[in-house]
Image 1 (tube, rainbow, N blue to C red):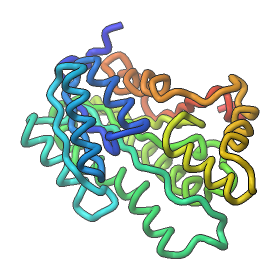
Image 2: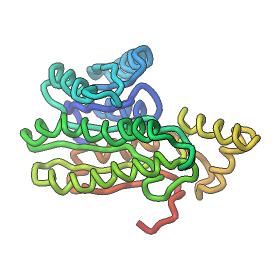
Image 3: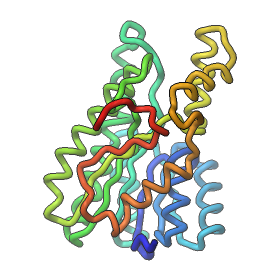
Image 4: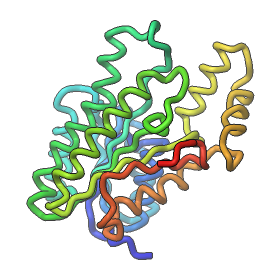
Length: 263
């Protein structure tokens, strides 16, 4: 299937590893030029070089912490200077710390809000004028299954991923007349460093092995295993494509059946 991404320009946040990197790989394989950002400059440089070598597309890496004021605009501006436009935006951010309500400080709430919600809002704000002017655009927010079914001990993620979902659903209606779609993709338990970190945290708190924590998740997943980043990225690439032109305002889990809700 030709996704119509050849020659498009995609900005992918937090793309040096994990799900962001998998999405960047998939978009590059479809012929899209990339603007990638991540906090660790060395990891980002390595990812850009590897993607360019594998896919033969131009890749611009912009080291940035999107939780910092002005960082999102800076990344988008660098992409516009290099490529002249941004057709696709994939917002993404690492998960905030686990914890229950009584253990989360005001500073932790503020930091998580900047990381998850404010970064998505500012990235969208930076790219929307160009998308509106050209009459075409794709915005895809990587959130979490916690936006549909809260996960125990992940209060910050449960709260703020839901906030991104509400923002995106409203924005989708506002920009639809301009040929722009806005969707959310919700990863479940996927084999990434973030999930490994959560497994270690659970193991430490409960006095078990990380493998036991992972086995517990696998037992809750009808498919009986963790997802692979490339499986997640396949749907992400489709939602960013020309073929997905009539899909907007949706939140789609990629979770092996973990979410129990009907919708």
